View 1 (tube, rainbow, N blue to C red):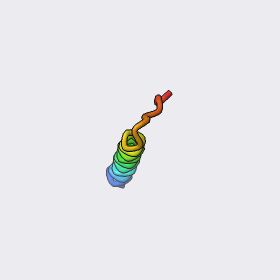
View 2: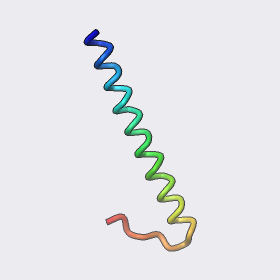
View 3: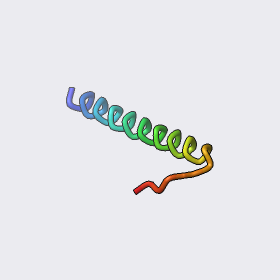
View 4: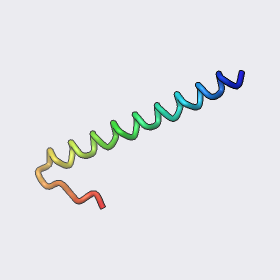
Length: 41
């Protein structure tokens, strides 16, 4: 039971990380595609 909960939490964290990475990639690609990339500050 404990192992299953830990694995589930790990998968959730992994999914969130992948989702954020994809979102960042899409945003950067969109900004670069417009021709005037804004500073990520």
